[in-house]
Amino acid sequence: MKIKFLPLALFALLGNSGPALAQQVVNGAVPTPHSATGITSGVTMTGQGGGGSLLVGTVGGPQTDIFTNNSAGAAVTSSLLRAVSTDTSSQSNIVFNSSSSVYGAMGVTQPGGPFLLNVNGGWPAGYFVPA
Image (cartoon, rainbow, N blue to C red; front, side):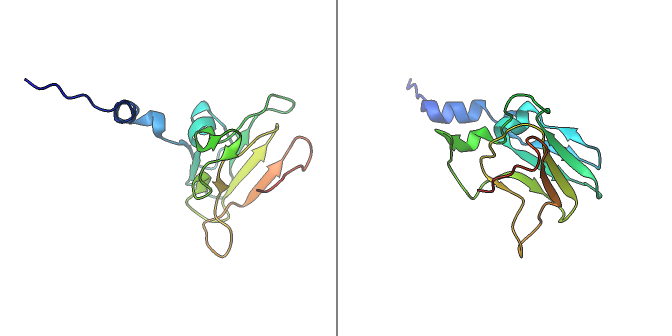
């Protein structure tokens, strides 16, 4: 009888399939707090209907990052990956209430699409540094 061993990397990949690799889903026009899933795997915004918002962090709270799985040594590992995506242009909003690092793109820039409606930095007021 032969015994075959799967390489450790393949075993880890198979063992981590399912929701653990899925992004946080923000569905509908209700403001939704950023979750642990969004911190590690990013966010997908769907069915916003003109008012859906992703709320990142709390005012005066600790740093809350988005899509840390796409980082190494505080640098984005793939600029092609979306940290925050949306299914419809000009419907989704992001409000940053604390400092944050976003490891990947947010929406798509014009003339592509779909793109976000608003990205606001709530703390400190209006401070936003695009990549």
